Length: 439
Ligand SMILES: Nc1ncnc2c1ncn2[C@@H]1O[C@H](COP(=O)(O)OP(=O)(O)OP(=O)(O)O)[C@@H](O)[C@H]1O
Ligand SMILES: [Mg+2]
Image 1 (cartoon, helix red, strand yellow):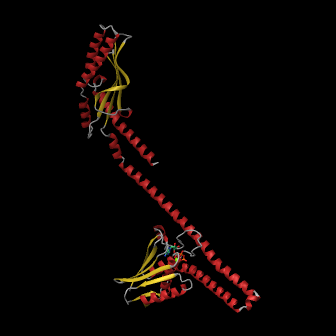
Image 2 (cartoon, rainbow, N blue to C red; image 1 turned 90 degrees about the horizontal axis):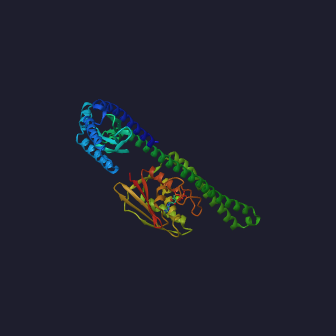
Image 3 (cartoon, helix red, strand yellow; image 1 turned 90 degrees about the vertical axis):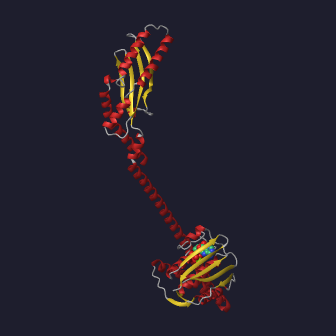
C-alpha cells in the first residue's frame, strides 16, 4: 500500500510538473519561433538547401546516386542546423524571465524529411518513426517531456516532421526531494506497523507460554496431590484389616506412612496458598538480628539431618570470617536457602556435592550455593525465577516439583532488599548468588 501511495504521488507530481511547465514553454516557443520551424534561422536555411537539392535532383537519373545525393543532403543540412542553432539562447532567456534556477535541457528530434520533386515523387532524405536527435543535450526524451510535435511544410515542397523535447536537469531527483516528507511518513508508518506486529506476536507468544505453564502446573499439582492421597487410601484400607490391626509393628508403620503423606499434602497446600500471598505482595517480614554464619550452619545441619536417610548429599562450607549481625526474617530466609539446597540435590544426578560460601563486600554480604549437578542452558536460566517455570517443560514426574521454589526464593530475597542471580553451565553445575545488605 505504501509503495502504491508513494508511486502514485510521484506520478501525480510528475504530471503536475509537466502541466505547469509544458504549456507556458510551448506558448513561449511558438510565439518566438518565426514560421514555426525549429529555430529562427532554420526556415531560411532549410528552404535554401532544399531548393538547391531539388534543382540538382532533376539532373540525377540513377537510383543509387539519387540515394547518395539524398543522404548527403541530409547530413549537410544537419551540420548546418547544428552550426547555427540558437535555441540555447531562447531557453536561457526563458529561464531568466521565469526566475528559474536552471535552464531547460532540450532536444530536437527529426522523424521525417522529404522533398517533393513533382506532384507524385518525393525524395526522402530521412524517415524513421523513432527519430534522430539532431540538436540539444537532453539525454532522455519521451512523451512525458515532449513540448511540441511539429509537422511543417516549407513552401509546399519540403516536408519536415520533428519534435521538441525539454526538461529540467535532474527532474526526478527534484521531485523526490519535494516528496521527502511523504517518504519519511511512509517509512515511519511501515516501521510502526512492523513494531506493532512484532509486539503483538511477542505478546501472543508470552500468553501462549503462560497458558502452557499453567496447564503444566495443573498437571503437576494433580499428580502431586494424587500420589499421597492414594497412599493414604491404601494404608487406611490395610488398617481396616483385622490381622494387620492386631500386629502392632505393622500398624505403627502404616500410621507412620499416613502421617508422612499427610505432611506432604500439607506442604503442597501451603506452597499453593503461599503463592497467593506472594502474588498479592502482602508479605510482612518479621526481622530479627542473627549471626549469619551461625544461622547458616544450623540451617545446613537441619538440612543434612533431613537428608540423612538417603545420604545422597555432601555439603562443603566456606564462610567468611565476620561476626556482624544481619537482619532477616528467619522463616522466609530459611525457606529460601532450603529451596536452593533442595534444588541442588534434586538436580544432581547421583550424590549431590554442594558448596556454600559466604563472603563480605563493603556493607553487603554474599551467599553462594553451588552444585555440580545437571546445570542448565542460558535459555532456561532466563526463566527459572518465573512462577510455574520448570526446566524441562511438560508433565515431568521424574523430578517432582511445581516450578515455584525459585519464584519464592527471589520474592523473599527481594523483600529482604537483596538480589539473587544464577550462573550455570549445562552438565557442569550451577551457582546461585544472593547479595544481601548488612543493614
Ligand atoms: N541447582 C539447579 N541445577 C539445575 N537446574 C536447576 C537448579 N535449580 C533450579 N533449576 C531449574 O530451575 C527450574 C525451576 O526451579 P524451581 O525450584 O523454581 O522449581 P522446581 O524445583 O521445578 O519445583 P519446586 O516448586 O518444587 O521447587 C527447575 O525446574 C530446574 O529446571
Ligand atoms: Mg525447586
